[in-house]
Image (cartoon, rainbow, N blue to C red; front, side, top):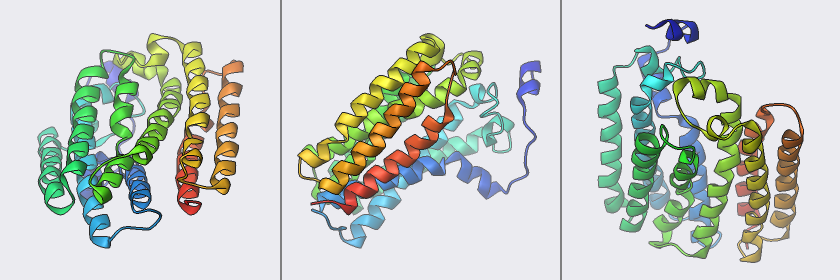
Length: 298
C-alpha cells in the first residue's frame, strides 16, 4: 500500500461475505431505480398497478441488470476508489472481495437479466435496459468518467432509464408520458450528483477524476446546480400539463421544486464550497415528487 493509500485508509469494519457482495450492488441505487420503474408502470397502466407477473419479473430482471452494472462499476473503479476517503473502505478497494469474483458475478447478473427480460417481460424493455447498462458501464464508467467533466451528463442518461423501462414493460413501447418521466430523472440527476461532487472535490482531484468542480471550479459548479434546479422546476410541471397528475401534484411539485431552488441559490450566493443538504434533499425530492404524482394521477 502506498503512503497516500495508508493515509486515506479507514478502519475496516468486519462484515459478512454476503454483506460485502450486497454493498457492491449499491442497494440505494437499485431501490431508487425500482421506485422509478414502478412509477413508469403505474402510468403505463393508466393509474393502476399492472399484473403482479409483470411487476415481479420486471423488478427481478431490472434489479439484476442494475446490481450487475454497479458491481462492474466497482470492479473498474477499484484503483481510484483506493485514493478517495469516501470510497477507500469499499470491498474491492480493501481487497476483502477478490476482483475476479466481482467481475464474474457482475457479468452473470447482467447476462441473466438480458436473457430473462425478453422471455418474461418484453423486447422493448430489454432494449432499453441493454442501452442503460451500456451507457453506465461502458460510456460513463469506462470511457467518460476519467476523461471528461461531462461524464455525469452522459451517465445521467443511463440512470434516467428505469421509469421508461417500467413503462415499456407494461405497454411494449414508450410515448410522451414515458419521455416526461425520463426527462425529470435526467435533469434531477445533475444537481444530485454535482452537490456530492462539490463535497468530495479534492478527493476527485487527487484520484484524477475530472468532475465539474475539479475541471471548472466551485463557483461554476454552483451556477450549474442553480440552472439545473430552475430547469427541474419547469420540467416537474409537465405531468400536470400532460394530464398525468392533478392540482395536488401541481401544488406539491411547485413547493418542493421552489424549496430545492432556494437551497441552490443560497449555496450559490454563499462562501461555502458545498451544502450536503442539497444532496440529501434531492433524494427526498424525487421520492416525494413520484409518490405525489402517483397519488394524484388522473
